[in-house]
Amino acid sequence: MKIMDAATRLVVCLTTAVLLTSCAGAGDSPAPAATAGPAAPTSSASPAPATPAEPGQTTGPDGPRVVAEGLEAPWSVVLLDGVALVSERDSSRILEVAADGAQRVAATMEGVTGTGEGGLLGLAVDTERRLYVYSTAADGNRIQRFPITGVPGALELGEAETLLTGIPAARNHDGGRIAFGPDGMLYATTGDAGRPNVAQDRTSLGGKILRMEADGSVPADNPFPGSLVYSYGHRNPQGLTWDDAGTLYAAEFGQNTWDELNIITPGSNYGWPIVEGIAGSEEFTDPVQQWTPETASPSGITHLNGMIYIANLRGRVLRAVPVEDTSTSTELYAGEYGRIRDVIPGPQNTLWILTSNTDGRGRPGADDDRLISIPPVLP
Image (cartoon, rainbow, N blue to C red; front, side):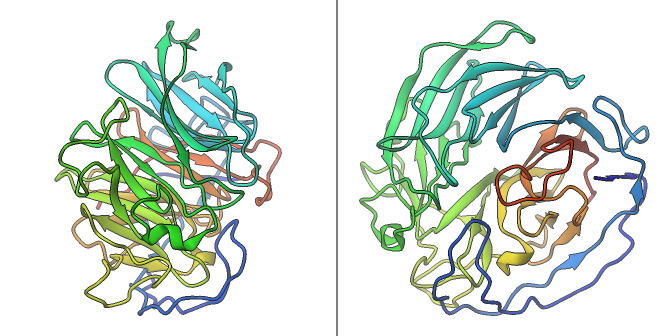
């Protein structure tokens, strides 16, 4: 893989109208497509390649840096005390990764039984040094909480406290992203587990964005009294982030037609499986932007400096969406790192991305998978 020269700016800006296709999303089985509206415009750009960086080194003062390599199907990354904690989907390991790329196993999760897209998925940390983990168990997907002990270089997890169980699980469509919002609540994305109708059933935890207190209880101000459901009608959302104004964004895998970037409002219905993509119906909330699955398949997303960054798997691209105009987007590093699973704000105004080339669907190189630090793009 080649590492980009961060000093090189966007050299091509191509406005397109994305056409309807019948290709399935990453990890999805083909099925009849739903009716959708027109695609939003997109632009693309790829900086010129530069000499690859070794772990712990950069290609320049502000250039990309390989933080770690040799990871096994990493899924989520969070920062704590200057080190990264990385979940590996299939090995059930949580790795501690130091700034110089040194790795150690901080914990191996017990009872993880996922296959396919299931396994050890999302991570989140709170202000009390507790790690929240979304994983697949024998009875479905679950959310657990662990106290973090030790110091960097010797971090460990204490006894598990299970906050939520029984989230629908399957080989496909497990959701899995968890994150704390600016309101202090824990949010979780759940997939429809291959049963589309559960997304419209508000008594089911599948096909939803859930909102809960840090102990897993239902917040008093949730849109449906006594329910963790915050929004519904989702197929397989895997990205959550908030902008500086507190607006919640979610990225979602479509079926054969459209992947989506949605602005999430409490109690709203996002249409799946009745519609996919922009429907133009008052009954459903339309995405602010959509892409064909082969050009996107979005997973983790984050916000930094007025820009929403979206990690894409099949599209093998990092997509940047300005908060001031969410109908547009720019493609970055197209094909340079392969499949990208997650993106987070890194230290010193950087972005950190996780590649996903060893998950059974990529074409891994000798150094895959990797955690890479890259410079952000200004809005």
